[in-house]
Image (cartoon, rainbow, N blue to C red):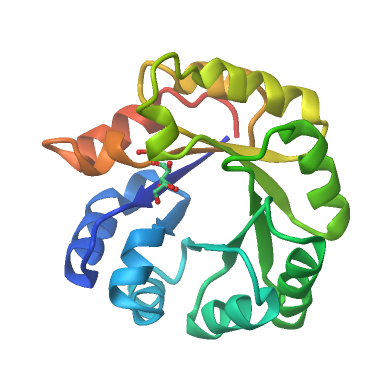
Amino acid sequence: MRLQVAIDLLTTEAALRLAGQVAPYVDVIELGTPLIKSEGMSVITAVKNAHPDKTVFADLKTADAGELEARLAFDAGADLVTVLGTADDSTINGAVVAARAASKGVVVDLINVTNKATRAKEAHALGAVFVEFHAGLDEQALPGYSLQALLDAGSSSGVPFSVAGGVSTATIAAVQDSGARTAVAGSAIYSANDPAAAAAALRALISRP
Ligand SMILES: O=C([C@H](O)CO)[C@H](O)[C@H](O)COP(=O)(O)O
């Protein structure tokens, strides 16, 4: 299982610092939506230039103009971009067109999708390389939030998937057991006193490739 760090910081300088600290332990470096909104596409270029060996994931959460937004991120150096599962199929299609032209990939983010397993199958059929079973920061803050529901939905979907929604050392084993191809960890790493140690601890709990 791959480990993805989600960088939800607000400056390129801070993102480069964190990426440098955790790069030895992660496979994928995600530039979070707030970071890209704060700094623009240039943060993608800066991180890709600093870490050309890593998969750079631009969490655009595109809702419209899929081809245009995806192309902007691919041109800046992204390897993967996200499109919302709540977007129209034509938006996902457009992003997939841009991805195929650039030999890169689209990930469909199921944040706020009601029937995640069904939409996951549709997104995969539309050309997403995998789907992200995701509970966002706001949903995680609601009473009764359960990561396990995401894992169960992912397992039942039958398509390649990642999981994001408060992944930590307490839950990463369950993420792996669900069959996820990638575990996404944001605050468990960037909010830690020692982000490198936090990423190393997560990595140490992953036992399958
Ligand atoms: O995608 C995310 C969120 O929508 C804010 O951009 C997070 O990066 C994702 O949820 C992972 O972060 P944690 O939930 O803090 O692990």
